[in-house]
Amino acid sequence: MKKTLFLFFLFGFSALYAQNRDGRIIARVHATATRMNPQVILERFPLKPGDRLTAQNYDRAQDELHNMRVFKKLDFNLTPRKDGQVDIDINAQDGYFIFPLAFASGGGKSVAALSLAAGNLFKQGEMSFFFGGASQDGFTLNGGVALGRNSFYAGYSKINTDQRFYKNYWSNTFGVFSTSDDEGEYPGELLAQVHTRQENFTFNYARELTPDLSLFIRPELVRYQYASTPFMQLDSGSHNTLTAGLQISDNIRKGANMGALSGYGLTDKKKSLTNLPHTRYGYAGKLFYTDGGSWTASDYRISKLGVQATWLAEFKARHLLALEIKAQDAFQAHFSDEILSTDLLSGQGRYDRQIRGQRGAGASAGFVYYLLRNNTGLLSLAPFYETAYVYRAGEYRNHSGAGATLSYKLWRFPFPVGINYTHNLTDGSHQTAFVFGGAF
Image (cartoon, rainbow, N blue to C red; front, side, top):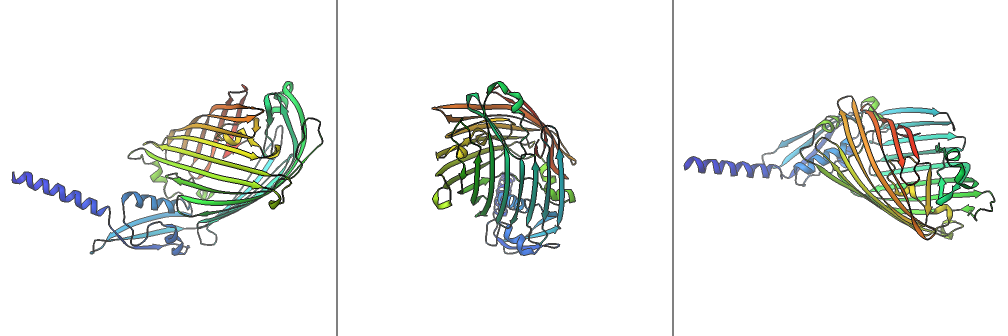
């Protein structure tokens, strides 16, 4: 009986001790770094003196520093104090990187691009990039910087190409990097072809209010010029808008960046290769409103509202299931500003045609299965299904697709390389595309 009581009290004391240990008050947070100002690390680390420490918030706080992607090594140490509180010491080895990357492709349309990525040049943990690309249809230039909880982006593009319109309200996808083969694939369905010139200047500012919540504001100056056509009355002129929105996310892991080539940003690689103790769930949401009119120097009245929600399950072996829904409504929009069916899809499929309309909604499901996970890289197979309905000419018209992407990503070269196959379930077309970060 005495032994039983002793074990009972021993078990109870151990459980109480574990509970108190997992809920101790943080007395001090200290950081050291190689180049970076330690205060930058302390500002990005969510836990502060006076906070209660738990296993969950300690793990997520570490992820905040991992996600900066500028460290070669990160060590976290907990030191108990005599008063029952705890100190947190962070030892960071940071550096800087500058990495250029160029590519070109030929075939039906020649495309060339150059990118430049840099990180922590000014010892503030900042990330910056520049990208420029050109094809026979035009060019695009853009760049941005993320510094602390603020990020800035600016871009300019100029396109001089043709828009083609087909039966059943399909139109081609066009842009600097569009390699659509629709002109030769659907000649029997072509109704009209309109020469289009588009100039676009975009500036985006985003502010992280909390680690999970951010707001953004995006002014956009757009001008269209359409060749005269008897097919339809198109809206040449200025389509300037201002967009504002909120983004929220929780338990969504961020990827690596070009610093991985120099060994930076891989501090959570071992953690990523370790199986989870249980399935982890995350979510993300986005709400935005776009408005334009005389007050934005637009020749047309524009008003659009959009929402997006994503639910994610990361299983023990790191396989991922993602479910997503999107919806947009163009309360006031002329032809150039209507909703595109591809905007309502997940982006996992490749399509050379799309449907445009006044409003619509879409849903998708995707699964990432890791065929191989080791210290060199990740080999994954990602099947998907996506569907969208766009309101056009008095009824909702469907654009659906299914397929899969087989890709391999080196830890030290974070761009996935592989192949994507997409079957358009609505019009029966097939697309096979080479994947390199994106697709060609």
